[in-house]
Length: 284
Image 1 (cartoon, rainbow, N blue to C red):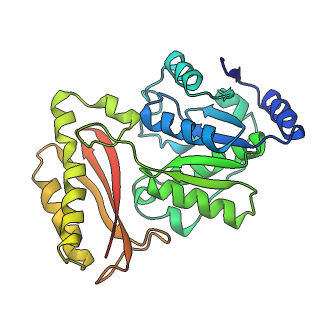
Image 2 (cartoon, rainbow, N blue to C red):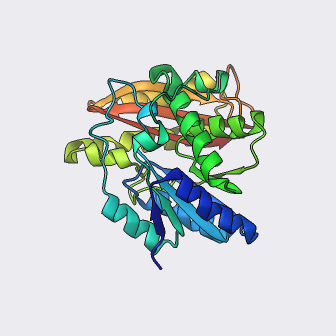
Image 3 (tube, rainbow, N blue to C red):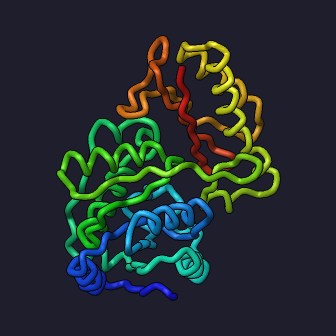
């Protein structure tokens, strides 16, 4: 069955209100479109957990800085709708920017400390844009659960904190990273890579695997774990490191000295002009 496709927020609210009156649970998968297997896995999980599934497709201008790739961000609505249909979504919400941010719009939602480091340090304002649009989506769709991939671990932590701090009645569900057969994390921005860059991008996964091996071999010092990842990334001529971080998986505070029982190794690396992120959870 084809999903209902809507762009008007009030029409979406009316549809969702009908579902709520029937006592149906609702899962939301927020996306910026150009859907890949990672998004499809989120829709499938939402389908398993809920009686109705909504997918939002919106390239959110408020999470892009003036120097970033808003205009060139990949889009393929026909393909996206087919993915939503094949995975069993009931509703696709695809608003225009003017419908989400009408004339006079001036409200923002910001998470302070969690959003300031890692990607937030090099992309100022990014997470304010993310939180603002996700808050709006929650208010329009009123989901019982919302689904986010763990590839963007900071986004997941920030959204989780926002819902807790603002007493939002929605469960945030983090889902596993989906990878290509060679280990590269699925990302819409992978489409920017040429053949040579695509091969070079594997250095992110290699660096994470070597960090995992170091911990498995007894290394517990955060600086040594970072050094293992750095050596691998610096060996790739096309790679330019944005950050290598070993942090607490919940607070995202940088680990000093020996890591605790669990730590997150998070990377952001430019391959040519394309910025890629990846991470892995390590522990002792």
